Structure formats: structure tokens, C-alpha cells
Length: 254
Length: 255
Ligand SMILES: Nc1ncnc2c1ncn2[C@@H]1O[C@H](COP(=O)(O)OP(=O)(O)OP(=O)(O)O)[C@@H](O)[C@H]1O
Ligand SMILES: [Mg+2]
Image (cartoon, rainbow over all chains, first blue to last red):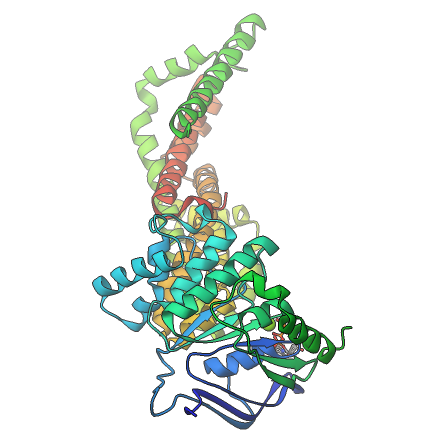
């Protein structure tokens, strides 16, 4: 077996505000293999974002060990993380192409090269022809695609997505799910994807990590053994139903 | 898209509404047989420009420099101070509450003090204009600089972006619409500030001229002075709007 790309072992995180302590994540342990698309699913407030921020190195953690990278897949925390949030958070005053270039600018990457890359990425997310538009000229779904292109511009090894399609309507969301799978297959990134949607998690994930409510405790770590490339026919697959039922049960919804 | 003809249409309507006001004014005065010293006709008002004693150009230049000077000073100091606030949190915590209290002072009431301290002339009037239009600029700029999406900050932080990068790439351009909304409010206040200064004590300027002709009941000249003051204000406001169009993307503008 290849060495895992991410290894969490008993990771806990306590928030301390005004003298009060709040345990948000308790004893999370799981591995992510290079190139996996792992879905984190759990109820609101259970600590998914907290866990993602710990992976991003945005805040420390209290207990356990968190290690990203392996000798085979070295990881530079300063330039190997791409982030996508629930809101696109594009800069209103920048054209789409320049929005995508933001991480490249911050990292000081060569600009002519990055510009070409940004165009390729916009093509990958289906936004050719929108390079010179401003964010307000794009629909919510299109803005989120641009945000995904922005997360990939510096060619990070790990992409962290926090409910990236949570603000989209159901139809657009389905479409974006297929797009994401295509982008993932083409870019071969390791992706950690946070969602509330159980079907979304099963449909996208090579693995689903189920967290239960506060503090986030790992309830299960399910390998989704469904064929790739995936299409929506899969949702009628018997095993797809088994997986979703199992997760619903874990979360106490029956 | 009918963007261009739409803009032309709006422009035409604006011109027509102004002309209609002049026509209504004219009709009101002539049909109502209003005495000239109460309200002059548009023609009589323009005619006042021919009195050489009133030194229109000189007075207008003085008032314009007071307005533009006070305004430029307020924009520079206001935006600069707000930037310092965003860089040094402790400075903001010390000074911001103070500014909010000072903002409650009716600035007009400071006029007599300014004159006691600095005597009169263009300089003190610039100070009065400055003091009256400085606050909205600091307050809106500080607000704009602090309105940054926390998630966006996280994104920059994962890339180890510097504080300077956050400032130049996110904070400052994000604050521009706020800065302009403060500058628009301030443009109106600067005009009022300069005129108040001239009323309180001066020997030049359109406000000063108004006090002079008040004595002789030359209402036409007073009307003309008000119109010229307004025009200076319109030019200032227009410049700010033009600059905003140049610098701020349409969607981000705050009126
Ligand atoms: N900065 C903070 N300080 C204190 N408590 C926090 C902080 N951030 C989050 N929490 C608390 O930690 C818990 C987990 O928050 P988190 O944002 O990780 O949940 P989540 O699973 O992402 O929820 P959602 O699905 O609604 O986004 C919540 O109870 C929240 O109130
Ligand atoms: Mg969250």
C-alpha cells in the first residue's frame, strides 16, 4: 500500500474565547491517500470547518498528530493548498482572469506563465470566453467555477472545499458535482470536500468520513466502492442506496 | 443593449428639468409681479454679473480655493488616518471613540473660535471647510478597510500572503467604494463649510460678497452668488463622480 498523503491521528481542537473553552473536534483519526476525494459529512456545527482549517494550517490543534505529505508526495504548506468556500468570494473589482490569478500574485509566480495557466483552468471549468468579465456578470454557479479555477492556479497538491456548492440551487449543484468529478479526474488532486449532503458525499467521494454532532467525533470511515467515472445513474445503484442509508442511520436520521 | 441611448436620454432629461426650473422661476416672477428686491428674474440675476465692483472672478476664485483646499486636505488626512487605524489597531481603539464624539460637535459653532485663533482669510476658511467634511471620510474609509471577508483572509493566509499584500490587493480596493461614498457626502459639506467661514469673517469670497450686497438689497447679486457657489459644488461633485467611475467597478459602487 502507498503511504497516506494526509494522516490524522487523534486530532482534537478546543476553541478558547473569553476564558471559555469549547471542544469542537475530538479525537479525529483518518488517512487520505494521494489523489483521493474524501467527503466529510456531518450535521451543522459539528466541527467540519474547524477540521478543514486545521488541515489548512490556519489554526493549530491541541491533541494528536496531523501530518500532510509523504516522501513520495512532498507537501509545502505555503503553496500546496487550494481553498474553495461556500461563497465564491471573488474580488468584485477584478475581472475573472485576474481573480483566478490572485494566488499566483501572492506567491510571486511568473505572471505570463500563470496567465496561460489561468486560461487553461478557466477552460477546464467551462468558463472560456468569460476571462474579461466582472464577477457580477456571472451566475452564482459560474462564480463558483471561477473560485475552483482560482484554487488550482498555483497547482496545489491539496484542495480543501468547504461546502462549495451549498449556496447553489439543486439543479446547478448536480451539474457542479459532475464538473467537480471531471476536474478531479483531470487534475489528479487530493481533495477534501465538506458537505451537509449525504447523497452528494456518496456520489463524489472515494471515501466518506462521517462526523457526529459536537464535538465532532468520527462515527465512520466508509470506502465508497462505486465505479469511476460516475454518472447520475449511479444513484439508483443498489450499493449507493446502502451507503446513504448507512450514513443516515449513523447521523440518527431514519 | 440600449446603454448608450439610455444614457443620452437621462442626460437630456437632466438638462430639460434644469431649464424648466428656470422657466418656472421666470414665470413666477413676471406673472406674479414679484418686486426685484424680493426675487429677481433670471435675466436680472445674470445681469448682476455686469457690475464690475462685485469682482466676481476674484471672489469666485477665493471661494473655490477654500472649498477645494479644505476638501483636498480632508480627503488626504481622512484617508491617511483611516489607513493608520487599519494598520495600528491600538491607534484606532484610542482615537476612534474620540472622533465619534468630536463628530457630534456642530462644526459651524467652531467658526468663531477658528477666527479668534487664526484671524480671517483663506487659510482659516479652508480649516473650517476641512473640519466639517473630514469626519465622513475617516469614518467611511475606516469602515471600508475593516470590511474584509474572513474567509478571504484565510485564503491569503494559507498562501503565506503578507499584510501588505492583504492591504494592497484586498483591503484598499475593497474600501474604495466606501471612500467614494464618504467623499460624496463630504463634497456637499465642504461647500457649506467654506461659505460659513466667509459669513463669519472674511474680506473676500462669494459668501463675503453676499453679506455686502445684502446691505444694499441687491437681491439679484445674492442670487447670482448662490448660483455660482452651487456651480463650484457641482463641479467638485462631478469630479468625484468621474473619478469614481474611473476607479470603481459598477457593481461595487455605493451611492
Ligand atoms: N472561532 C471560534 N471560536 C469559538 N468557537 C467556534 C469558533 N469557530 C467555530 N466554533 C464552534 O465550533 C463548533 C464547530 O464549528 P464549525 O464551524 O467547525 O462547524 P461546521 O461543522 O463547519 O458547521 P456548518 O456545517 O454549519 O458549517 C461550533 O459549535 C462553533 O460554534
Ligand atoms: Mg462549516
